[in-house]
Image (tube, rainbow, N blue to C red):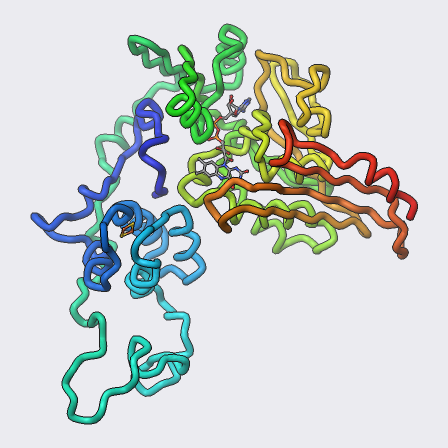
Length: 414
Ligand SMILES: Cc1cc2nc3c(=O)[nH]c(=O)nc-3n(C[C@H](O)[C@H](O)[C@H](O)COP(=O)(O)OP(=O)(O)OC[C@H]3O[C@@H](n4cnc5c(N)ncnc54)[C@H](O)[C@@H]3O)c2cc1C
Ligand code: FES
């Protein structure tokens, strides 16, 4: 599987056994440009060029997984890349040339959209005028040939096959990286180093190290443990392993809401709404579900998980605790113990007459922490409009996620 990540947040130790492809690796002007690079250049998708390597790699990763992406996949893939110069239009135009359907009606003679005046929005030229109104000519583009792409290095495959399943340790001058392979080992390591963070995504620990001077002499990275990637579903709910990436969780929820009746999927739909706008695809590829126990105050997911009555499954104590408002407010008696590890989270199905909503106000649709967010759940008395249960939680507005307890109490029964 190919996925784009933010280089600045990816710990070098986490790359053991993986193949890293950089923008220099896929093509250059001294060798041969990759079709993505060529089309972005020919479609005038670069000005200062600052964002271009990132745009190219996001598009490259998308094409490795989906050689003919849809427009939705394209916009989602580029959601984590910001450009200050081009206004995005020429970048999207270049990338759209890889899409199967162009997204327009193509009803004009030349296959252009009926909304376009002439080509590229310009008025049609008088007959005989040879000025070309086209910004680029698709005939000049290099074809995208998936068979010519880089392959996963056979040496790494052999290495993976021969590899013994045992805890991997990297020791540096200042810090140690421990990567256990079984739950038992993970629990033992965490017991020995209760203050060491569990890092799989590093998108929150990483910035704290970089920008706030936080130092962790030991990091535990359980990125090869099967139980942390569990996906199980029964009639009451869905249990998702703490090691699944946010993008994987998004895909799982998409599949679940398609299968189950709408009344059972209220919490899943609300979570999906936030997962689609949480950061960008690079961060969602790296960040794992388990981070919710860190309870960062801007978390879009936690207010929803709390109103949705989710349960946290923990080790080493083998206990289950509710992801409640008390937990999010960091009340000591609802807290995780330092040696505890989150293994999975159960999200119950919603019931008939129950509705869950997600709200979020931020400066941008994606890639911006919420100024305020909220999760709301209401259960009406069967067949009526009297409120039986109500919970509302807000994030981003206080030191922790907070509940609107008084309002809820006043509204119940009305
Ligand atoms: C550019 C950017 C944009 C963002 N936008 C949003 C946004 O719009 N909405 C939003 O809600 N968030 C946003 N975030 C925050 C994002 O949600 C978090 O950075 C991310 O989810 C953290 O996940 P991670 O796996 O990378 O955590 P890490 O940094 O690896 O770890 C975070 C913490 O979780 C703990 N932890 C992880 N797994 C476990 C486990 N199994 N058991 C016990 N403890 C565990 C670790 O010990 C650590 O303390 C954004 C972040 C970035 C960088
Ligand atoms: S071309 Fe300048 S930031 Fe995108």
